[in-house]
Length: 185
Image (cartoon, rainbow, N blue to C red; front, side, top):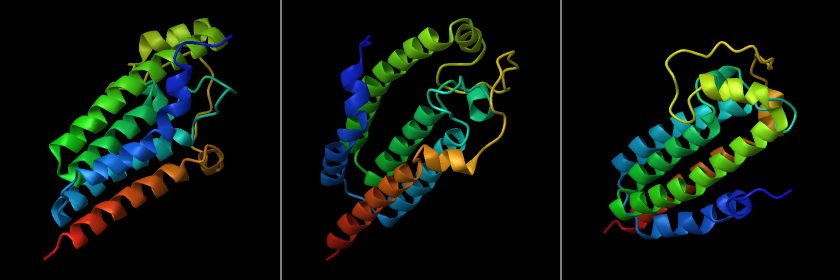
């Protein structure tokens, strides 16, 4: 059975490439904006890496580590990365493009994944959803009766191919540096 939102699931990453080109095109970065945006992006990368080390896609309901604070730590990390890219761009138009893209695509993707998890895990997911915020993290980890892997695994991080996000972010930072350098008199 195909759930609504399939287009957004398939195309959210693929459309990120032309989106990056548009963001770069409208940017007017400075060394300071690149540094501040890059540091912010590193926080997003760290959160995504931490979450990917716990996530066992299609194997189990992940409720430990960052998933005990927010049901969507990967997407929260992506939002922080987008904010970092927006800051690095030093362009309100680029920030607006990133914000619109993120809100439209990820709100649909999150709802679809919630339906999939509910179908796959039933009552366990319902308990999890009641106790853990959807996006912005809670201050204390939820204590759940659901069993979950309770430690970070670098092998799982690699299996989830999360390193590709870091490479992509480094490439966009390099693009900002190139634009800044080419704009020098």
